[in-house]
Length: 550
Image (cartoon, rainbow, N blue to C red; front, top):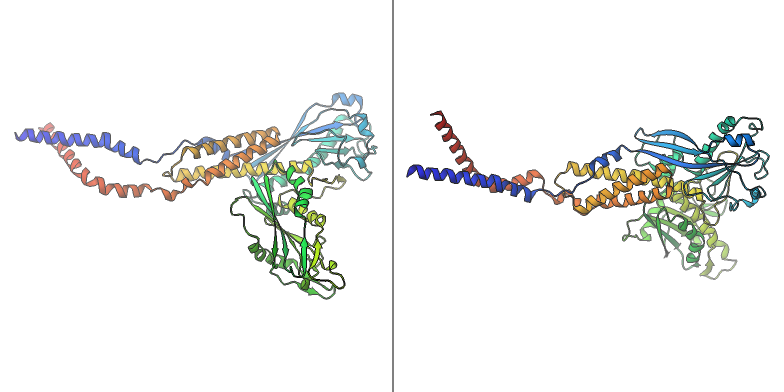
């Protein structure tokens, strides 16, 4: 009887232990584990070691008189030039220039004169991201004598053969002479090493001699899917003058054509407002020699904060805000002029703040007359104002107006405020910037999720990460193929998907218990039950060992 009771106790202990080990532990592990959807970790690691390759198609068209019929037959249909640059020893930029297509110009092209070329009506249209360089003879009358390269509004350029390439030179000498000049045209009309370095300003370290790229990267807003543009009229003295500005008509005439052309880059929304009794927050100094008030360059930095507090905020939107302020001085501080660091008057009487906006001072004391009756009705000259704001808008959006090399003639951008090749330069920079930003965001997210293993990765987050990785791969492939429009679109999709995944509220690690806290909670619950079972198992093992020894 004693043995049977003992046997039943052993079987009960073994049964309970088996149920705990076979059923309880897996069930507990399954119900408490963190759900983590699959992520393309291997592809993300490959993106972290990305070697970016940019390709630009340059079509070279030889005009009559530049090559002989015998040379024309020997001109290669396609020639590839490669230039490899390393940026910060991490990201490799590989420049490819694709040459040359042998084509004759139509005779009607040569009847045109340079004065009729600003609209480039006689030149063929080139796809986005590509260029067409027309090589013309030295004796051509299309360009003035002191101009060797003419850059039009579209993606075209005229290149005059130099005097050292007269008749009698071989084709190899002609091509060797043209290659560095075509690269120079490419750096003006397309991307350059400085442009790419400025686009990667958040990822690379600048060299001390690259001051131009530093200034450009700090001035312009970073790439964003959308921007909010706000025009504000500041009237600090409404008792002295009633201001009238046709902001809606001015925006449609001067700003909207530029924004329409920039639609592939980002979306824009525009609003305007009029603020009364708003001062600049800085007391101007009276200059007795000019009988006018002045604002020095050193005091301009203190103007922004007091004014910004009155502008309001677009809290409903996460897009950057570009502020453009038109300030009309009060009668007591009029006229008011802005002085540069060399104590010289700024011609536009305006200044801009990097990654914030611009302010223009508009003097109206000339409208008062000898015996004014206050308040004076004043109609603001919007053409003058919008000319200044348009130039500031180009700078803030990253449209770089660099000084062309000697011998270059650049056509004016026209009514749209932006040439086609300027748009291409901006699209190159934004595509590279988007790829680098999205890559950094995705790799940072992957590292975060790898370090904190108890964060739940839902299916929607995994879907966004996979979408971002796919869009990045497509953007890189399109950049290598020279398809700039598709590359920019895919890079924008990668930015949106990566940021949506990175800032998802469910990824907040404070929402989940660390593993040590889980064990601290469960051990007091399961330890009292597990101790008797463990002691019974140890006793059973000890008795079985004694029987074997006997």
